[in-house]
Structures are given as C-alpha cells and as structure tokens.
Length: 332
Image 1 (cartoon, rainbow, N blue to C red):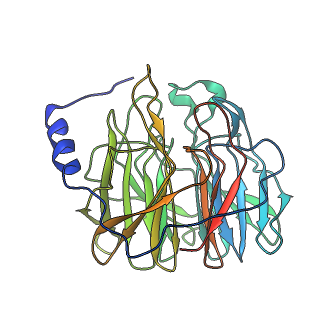
Image 2 (image 1 turned 30 degrees about the horizontal axis):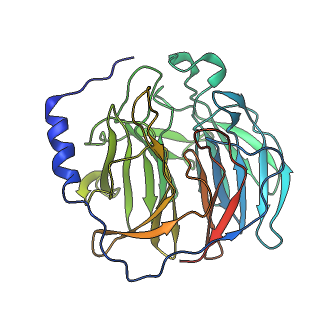
Image 3 (image 1 turned 45 degrees about the horizontal axis):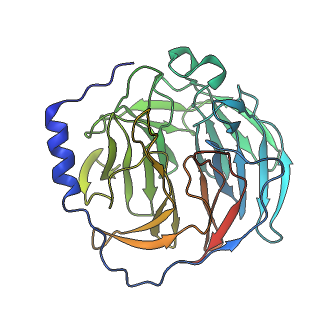
C-alpha cells in the first residue's frame, strides 16, 4: 500500500489547523430525541437516501470487516417504523455512494470486504437505480474508474458528482459527473481533479446554492474544506474544520444549513485514535464553523445521517468496540 508523506504537506496541515478554531455559535446546544432503531443488530458503512418523505438505509456491514449486507429498509418518520424493501441486487458492500435524482435513488460503487482490505479487485464499479414505487432495482452504467471505496458525492441540476476515493492501493482525486438522463443507462463524464490532497473517507455537504467537500484520510487526518462550483468545474478552499482532522464522518442539510457529525481521528495502527461525537455547523455566509454540542450516545464513525421534514437524523455506525444500532433526531 503506497502512502507518501511529502514534507510540504506537514507544513500545509500546520498552517491550516492553526486558524481553524470554532466561532461562538448564535444558536443553543442541539438536543436530541431517541427514535426507533432498525431491526437487527445495527450496521456501519451503509448508505442512506430520502425520497418522498421516507428515508432508506441500505448495504453496510454488521461487524468489523465482515457481515456485509445487501438489504434495503424504509424508515417512516410518522410512526418511527421500519419496512424491508427489495434487496440491492449487486454484491453486498460497504462505503458505497448514494444520491437521489427525480424521485429515484442511484446506489453503487463501494468495496467488497469479502475479498480483503488491500485488494484492487474488491473495488466495485456497478451502479444501480432504485424505483421506490415499483420497489425494484435497475442496473445503470458502470463507474469508469476503480477508485470507488469511500467516495463522496452530491447532486447538482439532476446530475450526480462523485469525487476522491481509494482503490485498495492508492488514494485519488478523480471527479466524475453522472447524467442519468443521457442514454438508457446514463453516462459518466470525467471532470477536473479535486485540487487538494488525494484521500478517502471525506464528506460532501451541500445546500441548494453551495457544494462542499473535505476531511477524510490521506496518510494524515484531513480537516480542510473546499467549495466546488459545478457551473465552471472549479474549486476554492474555505476555512478548515475545527480540530485535528477526521475521516468517516457524516453530513446533512436542514433548511440550507450544513451540519457535520462524528468520524474518527486516526492515530495509527497501534492506537486507532479516537471516535468523535461532536456536531459542527458550517456558516456558508460567514465561512466559519460553530460547535453545536455532542450526540448523547457513543462517539462513532461510519454512521448514517439524513433529513426528513425539517429534522435531522443520525445514528448507527461503530465505535471502538461494537457496531451500533440507534437513531437520534434533532431540530437545529
């Protein structure tokens, strides 16, 4: 596995982290309500998406590096209930990518943990469309690259953007656009590479006017934060996230406000670092970060987050000892 540590990246990290303190928040500390967990024992490294005021949770795993899943569940916030839907027809996987366009979900990429961690053949390129009305899956055009592990993505003008992943050997900065309306299976178009360091496990945060990407792991824990402009395919660096960097965090947006939760600061194979329970809010207009409190339960990585009817939901994932099965809601 090739991890390179250029000297100037150490300096870059020091410079960016020296001025990334959180601002005083104008909002009160977030409080949470506990919701109904999923049937079973919980999951980590899954995907979530929302269609017609229902949330869906699919894929993931039930244990560390094992227990991969291909099931799909619908969550109804009206009575906090779960209903199983049609299984994802591809290989069971972790760290896939999911996005919604015109009432359909597009799910794929990710990593087949059954083939081992540092195996390029375990990186999955298939991409599928889920129709919630028909409760069925349809195969779409494969992703053109094998950097498919722990990518980040967002939607702009009914097109899906995917950037920065791992291929079992190397990190990458490739950025691609998928147009589901072009051709029977949709088409992928390569864009300019993300200009920051190559990484995996980063997160995208977006509202209707702004699109962001950052954090993750690239031999170091990243805390950088970048804005992407899809109209002209350019990137601009913004204020770094508070703290010493994290990977495998989650994000959600409520009324155009962007929130980041949880993740791990990786401290190396000997210590593993620490999992985080904090909640951060990014102020788009002021380009600053607020600390908004902590989850009332365990710190975690590889969790899930989604927004329904003006409320945020976060849960599942894993800490240093177990995979978690809880779900919490809040209003900002």
